Length: 430
Figure 1: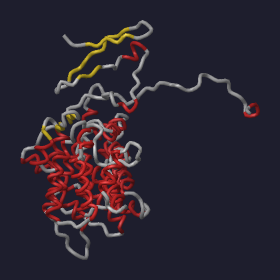
Figure 2: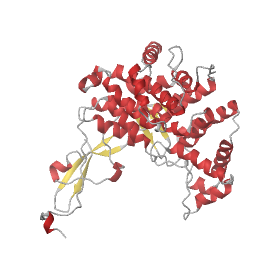
Figure 3: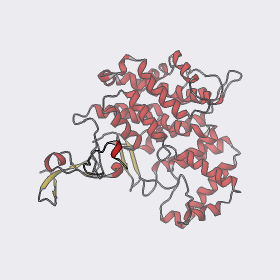
């Protein structure tokens, strides 16, 4: 017998609501008929207690520090898989065999070029344009180049569209960086892997060759994997809301990029490095800033410590810390901000205040350090986040369109404005 919850209302009405159980024994109360049957709605600012869908993509338990993609622990995927392999898993639901992975990787590689006309679009942006603005605009404009990108055709051709998106966002991201520094665009090369290709497009120049460091490549693979999906966050929800109107996958992903651009969502790793810069410019006194972070009256906050969802620890941070240590040792980077970051990490991990409040370093703290060590500029940090998140956005968009219960997103509201008022002619108004 199915479970139900009974809701009693002040006007004497009552309604029984189905209680649903997820595969990890999570509980949800189905209120989809609440307004129809009672005239009431629920009020949930930020939708923090509202599940807009059932999903088979990502399982996240913030209390226990668990993150799984399609049932696979993120720790195992980060250790064993490539980013392209995880992208296939998220979009298609299963880990690929050798032939499937080869075909998918080849398809992505062969679609990494963008139409030559699109290069002209970059000329229309200011030299100071933020790369996220360029990225979202260019991704949205892909809709104009592919007949398979509109209406139902976008859904029916999700295979080719997803390969194009994953391939071309890498090229567009690198081109946006080249635009910002005034260097010529570097075309993608089919013989390179996904991460090798991106690094080459970012850092090589016609005047000299660029040596691709395998440790940098592997570190980038892990960072992209750890960013590839994170359940129904702000940007994923945005992709679903926009996609629910039958907007194509390119437009929907472009909207996700803009949601990610917000500093409360995708800008945390950038804010972490800006914090390190502030500490450095103030003399590098770690103890001073640790004490400021403890003081409730102080406006200073340790950026990159503590996560809204993870109440214990961020499982991704445990993985990336090892990768970060390995990368910094390999590169031997002499950067005062990196030295401050390591001292700050040590201080926070050993201080009872942070331990008791479980304010551990997050993924964003370490990725900010790593991007800086690799040579990726600060304004590209959120772009790197978007680069990793594209497979998750595509998977969310695809799953939504395969859900028979899906409707166009249309939240309700509780109106608290004035009641009906008499209209006054402008001559009668004080």
